[in-house]
Length: 260
Ligand code: SF4
Image 1: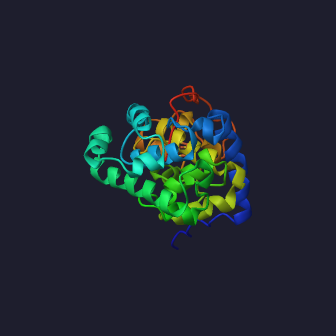
Image 2: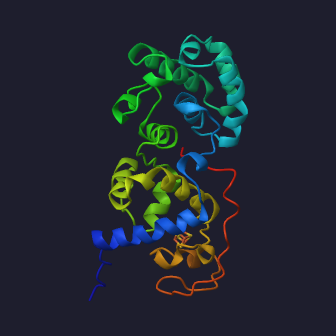
């Protein structure tokens, strides 16, 4: 007889798993979404610019570029009127600098024309934010959760991969993953949760070699055995309450992480 496919956990079981995962991640990577965000910024407009620049680029590199960017272009009015060649040169090291310059100028023009130049005019809804050039759902969620203190759960490649390994979703589409995760976690946790999953994906649940034996989530993770197929494992994980030999991730104080 063919083996029966593993049954999907009930929604209640998934919520219970999520409720146990959340505090463990919070202990490993403490702080609010604002504190966990690695991109240096003051206010929503600067974070929007920095997040646009962070596509296919490290936060560290973006942080090297933004001080001069924000010194030359103090707000959307200045950036909307930027000399394109000058702006491209300034952000060249972040990669894809031509399209990023277009997005920065177009986004700033959209802000001025449709919402206004003052910080108080800054749009807050997902619909308004994603109507701006260069602003996708992930970027809008970063700005909402980090700079505006609103619910937002950015899904990047780490969030998608780790949440699938944790059995919290079976989806492969980022928007569907976001929907699944939002249904499992309270909205006040969304922003920080996303950043913690990213840090966990970079430091412990590494794509090609997850460190299951060192993972604080191993007891709750249906993929914990995955580490065995890739590398040596010293202790069993699933269903074993005595998983040991965990390495505490490096100090989460800095650098932090931003979805991309
Ligand atoms: S137990 Fe392994 S697969 Fe599961 S989250 Fe931790 S490192 Fe990733």
